[in-house]
Length: 481
Image (cartoon, rainbow, N blue to C red; front, side, top):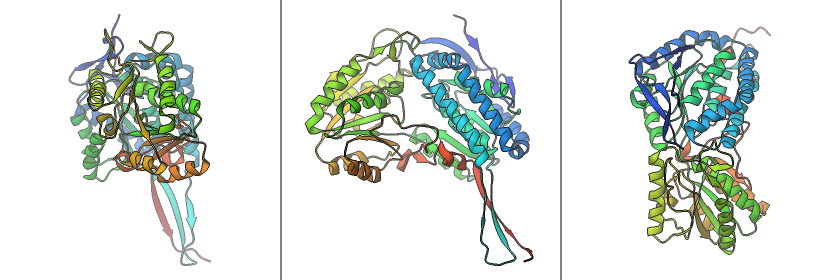
């Protein structure tokens, strides 16, 4: 198999890293190298910054219609090229081809949404205290922005940031994960072909995120950073951003509870549990990590979930019928193994799966653990793998307290037919995203983001574009009345 050699996209030009270094991109299903990508450093980041700053005034003064036209064209191109983009994603990230197709559609939806939101950046007038004054409020682009994106959704996590930035009039530099840089470079190609002015978008890839990101964080003229990733890295970036008081929006780690009450539609709860747990083989910040099931239905729920997960075919995501792909890298498999071993040692029962696959690829099968309790690692840490940890509960008050007993607050799911309970849980669960009888709540028009240590700010919806806008007010005097 021929190995592709990629290039960086800086200032509208395709280029190599100045040091001539490359790193390998590995297919997690086969462990084969599929591409070589430039390993950039601070010099490349500074070049991207200079190119963005040069075009920033022009892009900020472009009309909403111009920006919307480019975003809309890029979205159309993504949909037209969905098969090719999905194949690249499956090869570098491992998720089944059908899931990759779904992500391309999801990614394009952010460009479509923010193309329209660019036309709705409205100001306002406020009554003044004097008849000869007027108070005007205007919104302006915050300026050059940096996006640091993860490997688990290598297209959607970029467009969810690039869409509002470009719509608001902000140039953006993207540092994608070194595990999945190919999808990012394809997005750059699409924007280039869609007519985006040179310098407005750059993609800088590299395996040394510390010095690479530091070059941007140390630059005062980089005014905004958007990051999706671990809480630990988010805290570090927040400290670095403080030196020049950059605007920040972070989507950090999750520890999502999935709560099923005895009055729930059991079949619907199981169907949604499969979605919330197994989407992207559990490698999602909003994946169901702790499954709290009310005691009278624990056995029935476990049996139905076991039947559903056992029917899922594991393998290379490009093969027909595969619905469970590999984990991203060996460290991910090691973490899942550690969580399962800890749970078994402390008394959990393995109902399904429970040991990694053999042969090539970083595979771990769908696994169900019963008799899990809150003392186990799997109940305390984000597993990021295909393990359903089932815990019994008795009362509503109990499960709310247990679900909230975490530093994370990104997503939570609950299933019940009681509308009063729906409202109580919606108000009392300390999470930014709530799926009430819904295991797949994410959509471009809704505000995505967490509470507590799961992040700051929102992505998607009309709130998402506000993250890239400064509010200014003008007190206008000398008005003759």
